[in-house]
Image 1: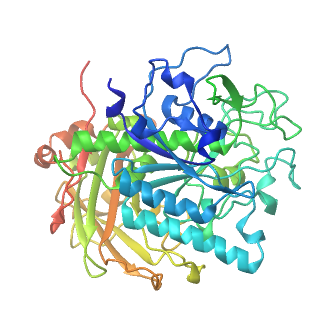
Image 2: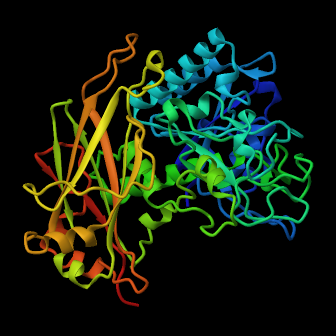
Image 3: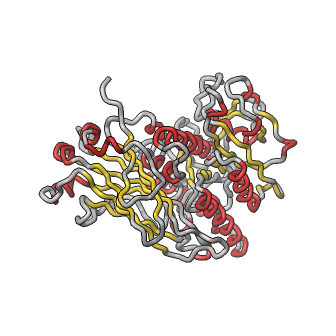
Length: 518
């Protein structure tokens, strides 16, 4: 494959050009980047870039040649001031990159603030939150994805409350970059536990990972990936981390959310490319929030049966879990996934989206359920910190236009205005209650938004609002009945093949179909 055709991720890292050395590993023919998309990164940036290009490699039995690269990267160098990244230049650097490289829509920010945002003196804290506001508003304005590492504790720092209750220590709270609304914040878990490590079970949250919630009690981190472990001394030791490529092409193991976040950025870039290729009309492209919704919809915790005592830590560290965006290429036959994106013109506009829920399948399924992940980007205002997001999306599911809305199971917190929500509906219960009144195979998702806070006065915000959702229809019974066959027999299924950016009165989502047969 021509490397220039691969999706690209912008890697935001600090440094100066004379300290940057080329990643020899990328130049051996496995992955040879065009100069216009970088290749010159510093030590930390090299390690992050290797995770973007090659993914999560298992080299515990010894280093081996990596597979072909699946992503390109653009090195976005941000000046360093007094050994720290110049935060004020960071947003400007991303803005300039978006203008110069419009094909780069995903950015990885593996340089989160170690200091919890509540620990700064009032004036400095306000400055930090203003920077978070600027990044969130840039994401809203430019339709991009910025994946932010949740952040790490300092080497040797031990919690006042022992792991897995380390989240009760205020020093484990996230910094300002990770606490925003429009960013995708990534936590970390371990897959390779050791007897001398802090986390001793597969899928446990990494002990160094900073925890949520974020601003306005937002349920961040959003997602999580494999980022390594720590020795019992709370220090990084050999064989406790994940594998990264250092600046001279040598592989070593390191731990940190710096190395979990680029895995999510990698998958987001690949997902956007796949959606554009398979489901968009020529000349159009998916919204960034469309990819965010699909990532959330296909996410699950790396392990659902962790020992007692981990539940509270998991909630504030791992978010919705590890995404599986490959399902856009290889859908499973066990469920039916639908993807929709559109634009609400203003806070008076309302979208009615037809969602196939076949009555034939409802009759046969033991525990019919619908999960919807809704994503939108929202203008924010740090002056109203307890609200922060200026718009709140309202979502209602109805069996018919005249039917009352179905209530979701309240298994996840939904703070007002937070722009990534996952809802689960027990539609089997609704079917039993309204069986004689539901007379069609199309349910409706009703979408609108309301303004809940004043916009930041320094910018003009258009009233139009991008929004997307990914819906998953499945049977939660012990012996599930797949909805795929029933969905694909519906007449509307033949029209659900393209995403449109043009709003129409009743919009139709795209269905992700699984192959049937051998």
